[in-house]
Image 1 (cartoon, rainbow, N blue to C red):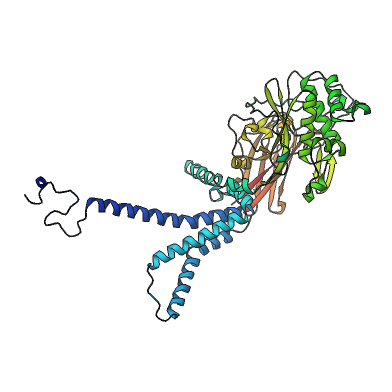
Image 2: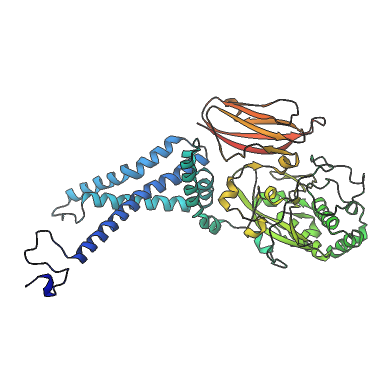
Length: 508
């Protein structure tokens, strides 16, 4: 049979009497491929305005801007700007004599115009806010889900934050750490995750410095936290002739303090006590040399100088002290360049920040205020405001991403020193609808205070008012917006309250 199956005809050839619209199998496959490609293209084009709106709205939410700005930006990206462009192009074409008919359809032109506008818009946002944009996406990228806690909302939140993490490279590429050059990499073998010491009561743990010569220092068997907020006796009694060089100071401390834990504390105390923070240089961003010999001679430094001096003293005193560069987060979501130290003792690694244990900086003024809050601090507490360049130096079994670091509640180590704990871990920001209720565990029965800003639109109280093992924070908000709660804790009998942390609340 001519053209029959037994004739050996190819299956993609038209049989005799083929019906209208028939096409070979390969042509059908190609048509399906083109259809899928066009569908993917349309989805991509539609996704670009959504990406631009998400980026812009997250920046607006991060900066507590008005919602109308986000709505206006969304409408401008699509359909106002693409359609306005199309109408303008049609007008120009109509005024031209002998204008050719456009090759593309109106829909195709609007799609391409939408893509061009939105790609330009997203690129401009990325170029203008490379660091703030990443922080905004990582902390407020889920603003539209703030009041939702369902499993679906949790999954959507994870997707959004995963997308935000994809632009971390831009943050890293534009974020310069001027202190990284002092990291010589010496003795910097990768550390193992460290088992965290439990907070233990210690003299002066409230932040009030004790008389440095009142009691002799007795080194514990192992590093504990917090250590007594009392200067090591060797720091207060070192003879002038033994304080002429880094080597002489290290030799004096090594020869008089045989215990490695006590030696680390003495070196930490020496750097925190003898060096003054160069607040003027930090404010002007003009840093003098931060190498150890210069810092030892001038007794002034920013964080890199504290860290390089402590590392140099540690090496001379027979200790394995490491310089660790990274970022630090203060009482805001923003983070800036920083440097600190780690030390290895008996095969375990511990974290130290002598800079933040030396005092307080306010503008161009440094006020001396020795403490031991950042000496042997547990990694999860230290990691609330310190983010190293290399994840291994978080000393966590599962290191945090930069986005996860920024989304942590802004709790001070003093919160944990005081034995405080939230019964339910707070998110950032907390979602509220006119009111908020948080429950705490107050194991040491510290006195607590809370304030809220802007205070004209909110009221917060702690009940029971007296020191209680299970107090709660209750807030009422008179109008929607973002609020900041700051918590203070201290021994009631002393009447001294120290900052313990802050929480951001978004009321809808």
